[in-house]
Image (cartoon, rainbow, N blue to C red; front, side, top):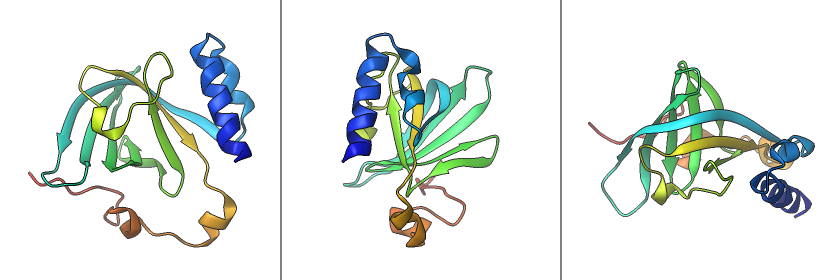
Length: 140
């Protein structure tokens, strides 16, 4: 609970102009700052798909989701994935739920490191709907 409260306070302070506030929370990292260029959703009941992103230095990135953000890949390398919590926020530091991510949005991807108990449980990609490479299957 204390981590969730610290992240919430940090986001609130960032939204009010204190953009360095999240750096005070050691378990939180801003891993991407850029724009959404495309969103592909898989058909079905779940919110499942892939968002293509472009970073400020024009490096392409991929954000996989299935009811929650699950993996961030930049330059073909996995940058962050579940069980860490990936959070996407807009330019005003407000969270963007997976069902509201759209092309053209300016976004930041934050990672909240998972607690050690969850990491030591050896949670695998398959538990989150990911393939072995960290990708959500969306079809062609």
